Length: 165
Image (cartoon, rainbow, N blue to C red; front, top):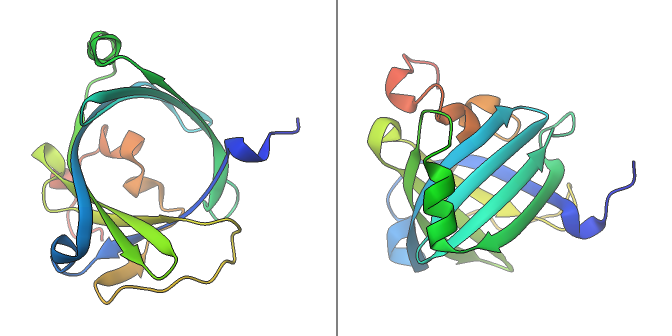
């Protein structure tokens, strides 16, 4: 099966070592999301980001976890709220901060609720081996570690982890 390039997401994910990103952020939004399906080969996510709703389907990642299929459509917040009521248990709540670093924008997610204490930064790239400027607060890379996928955090939240990180 051949996929359109606009349906391929290439991103790397990192832990965050300090709160310095908050001072560097040019935007922040609250996100509430749930999953209609958390199967690794095809997750289906419902998200409310600020005052917008989205329905997203993600495919299985490649060997490194850097690249995977992603399809997303905007929906009304009313529809998103209705779909959230159908989701599997484990709603994800977080504040997303957007930080420019060089030519890239990092999305830094500070999780709340059962995932409080977890802060993860993602950067989208045009190719897997693209070079990007790393902010000082960027920690260990966790790209491909499925524990950090939101779909998995909804089932096994950070509060349950015991010295796994």
